[in-house]
Image 1: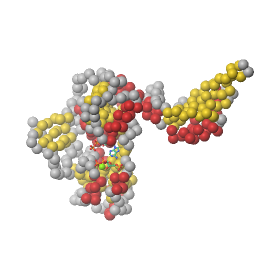
Image 2: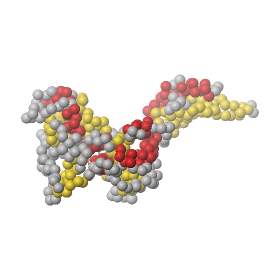
Image 3: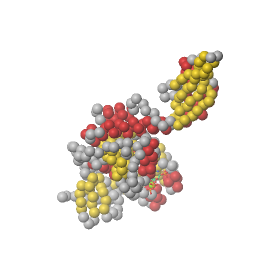
Image 4: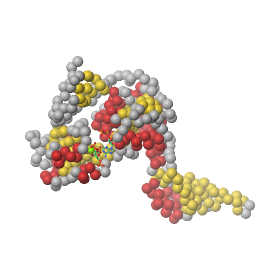
Length: 398
Ligand SMILES: Nc1ncnc2c1ncn2[C@@H]1O[C@H](COP(=O)(O)OP(=O)(O)OP(=O)(O)O)[C@@H](O)[C@H]1O
Ligand SMILES: O=P(O)(O)OC[C@H]1O[C@H](OP(=O)(O)OP(=O)(O)O)[C@H](O)[C@@H]1O
Ligand SMILES: [Mg+2]
């Protein structure tokens, strides 16, 4: 069997999917050779091929639907928390056991994997669904059209992938990508040196932004040290609080953001179309996510209000910008007995209010005669149909 021989050199922004790695070569590594092909495993002792095969055609034969969840790192705990909040508790006997079940979804088998491996295994057909950061799916999925983003905003793991340069020296007055590109220092002989772990997105971004003389090197972490060590001029890495950049005297620049990222739910198109039950289960997971995520930003507000009729009370409520609720207020009569007769002088109103607008809403309610305002948390908001489900069906051509 002939094996691809990887080269140990820096890779340039004249991007080809074959990734070369800066020296020295590790004893064993993976290199992705093509968007639709295989990852080869090479080792100094033995050479074994086809580790993560991407096979076109029919899906792997099995009955269960496989969901890949992050096994460790930043995304792991938050992913389990999200599922739990959606009443999908993952039953894992101990943290080192990589397979688990979700009793509420009996046809699902959970596999804990590193986020980048979840993407690889979705492509190879060994997983059907997965949760990871958008940065990871963009980097390791490389735009493969088998990967479908089912939910693009799970509201955790927020960060952005960004280019950063030193605050000092020749970069002191450089504040935009355009200014960086126009610096006379970068030539074919002395290109801009960028350190990044994003060996697909980095060169792609530089190409798309017309930066010609760029060379990339890679490392597994602590990239922010590279400029001060003299290894690189710039870095391209994830930023969330900005502390690591600040502590290493680096700054972001205008036009330098490659990608805004948060946790996403991804599916294999092939699995959704061909695997029995995969689409229905995805629908259920999506509905639970959407219902929970819509609700977390809202409170239920109940108040009593004096009025002549339900319509008159509703009109007063709707005259206030923060009180319109999801579809308008629910107004119900509060009955009492007066002179031996049952009458309704008061009405109870129920509305949903964004958490951020809570105090403003209470003020507006008081202004229109509301009293006894009760605030309760909202757990789920199930709509008739979620927009993301319609979007998914359309992406699948269904
Ligand atoms: N400040 C941050 N730095 C890095 N990743 C972040 C940050 N904030 C959120 N994330 C998200 O968390 C993911 C990193 O998760 P994790 O720590 O598990 O790393 P990993 O994927 O296991 O990779 P590695 O082991 O190479 O660090 C990123 O892909 C990103 O989506
Ligand atoms: O903007 P901040 O909140 O400072 O976060 C950004 C830093 O966090 C990540 O590194 P990580 O903590 O994973 O360490 P590593 O680089 O050694 O992997 C990332 O690679 C940045 O270096
Ligand atoms: Mg880092």
